[in-house]
Amino acid sequence: MAPYAVNTDYQIVMTIEPGVGTGGATRVQWFRDGQFKGAFETPLTLAQLQDANMWLGRSQYADDETANARYDEVRIYQRALTPAEIAARFTAGPVPNQ
Image 1: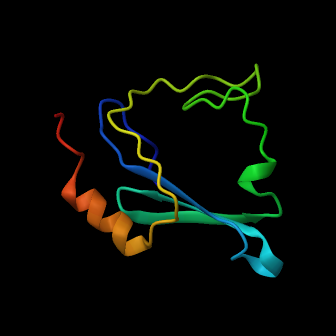
Image 2: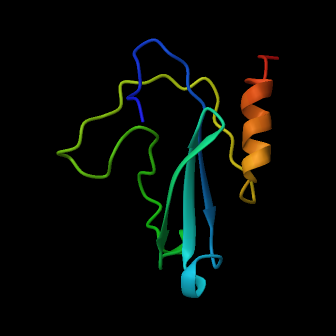
């Protein structure tokens, strides 16, 4: 996969589905520009995450670099979108400012 390019817009989507992985694990998938890029499973659930300092583009670890990025739009859903829904949202583009 090509790296991210400077001054280029991307749609990044992460889905989290508790209980649908192997043996009831949580499945995490990520997509870039409407295309599936990877997945992994974890025994953890969202409820087990410590919710202090949940940042976009910034790690909990002091030695990690901060993302040099701009966010035009952030959406949070109550369910994992399907690959078809993710692709359709990419094709439709961002929601215009109101």
